[in-house]
Image 1 (tube, each protein chain N blue to C red):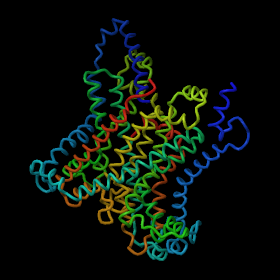
Image 2: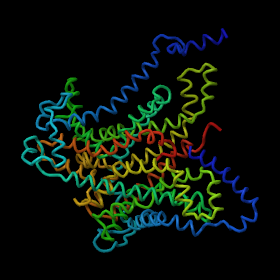
Image 3: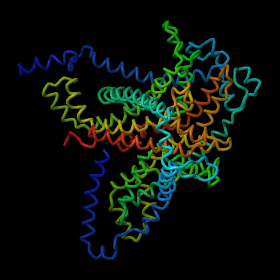
Image 4: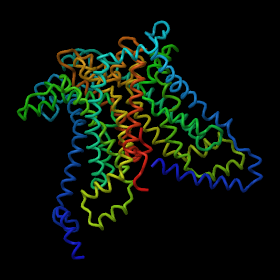
Length: 310
Length: 318
């Protein structure tokens, strides 16, 4: 005991664990945590501060931490509630952007692809986990292998196909590549289906229930939690998707928010960009994801682990 | 973790399998091959797989051997695209820029994320903090890029205001050749560090507690424990995280497209930007396809080398 005590004391000299006095290691650690949280959150506050400023006053108040000349003008401008004259007076470009239209398009695109992808992937995951058929593992292996393929590699031929089908600038063209499956979604759900008990299912089968009924009445309700998690992750991913909509959805009528924001930025006249308008637009565009995250944050946070690698 | 679930599920299935085996008459009545039903269930996913993954992959390889400008039909030109690419200065520039980006992005991101993961594991255990750190990852690339484009603006950006206040010269973050790539790498470190930290954190949680207990009984210092226990046991997870993040990092596009568009001059024209410009700017789909085949091969090699070299699929725990 006495011999081991000094050897223990030396390395832990800075950490007198059981004692009351200030634990400097902990203080240091918490300081780092605080810095990380501030670095993460502060830019969002700056986004809000800019959006609540009057664009014309930004230049003279660049380092003021509070909104420069507080105004809701930027939000009104983005949402089309301001006349062009007012907009120009506040430092906006005066050009209208169809924010509501882009918002609607984003909602349609993200909702349709999420619903299709989760449902069809669940069906496939059921076939890969609960049904027995020859070649099952080979096909599953093939599906999984596509996880390795970089999106750009299939994006070019996919673009050509959508173009040949005459589906450029349509919702069908936007949604089709995402609608049926992703290897990740099938893999994710298969894990849960495999771990579900077979007993209820076998009992139902004895009662003469068919697979379709088992799938809808037993498997899906029992997998509600992982399905919800997957739907949430998929929706966020689709809401944020930029590359594919940039390729096939340039037209105003199907342009989604991410693409619209890029256009909005490059539209600003050379001299003075409408920063407060831009920040108001990004804030509204991020809002659905932020709200979902506030409501279901724990689910998202806990879902990220190894099976969560995307 | 995935392997554990799979391993855990297998015996359970076997058990029920023998259960049905004992009930011999029922088994004979139902020759269990659900091929027809399975086809029905798998049909939509199979359609998606064939139409949007399999066929395009084959077509992509085929197009890389052709000259194709969308108008008319592709003409077979053999390996001409590839020989042209190897003599293409812009390609080598794009590769150099991309590698520089990946090195900066992954280097900083992994070290910071490892630090954050250790903090999450040992100190800040609340889900709220983990959620806060994950936030930037959930916001679209485009939004993050625009936010930082504003904050790093030369004249009015708050960052340059602070730099100015410190008495240092303002920095043209996105506007100068030497700063463009480090800036874009930094923005994406900010976006991804919390997410990467969560992945590593999940790995830390899978290290059994008793290993640490033994270490502390032996009087190991925290530093010693970290290097002799945490790091070796975390290695498979770290390798997986590295493979995934490096592959993602090589495909950087959104941030570049929204902020610099590849400029100034060629300073931030990463490989995916170059592919995009070739295909959609110059309508040179053959050349662009060859570029994306090369990118695919590079990514596969990088993943293979990482798994092999760092022995990602072997655990030290067994």
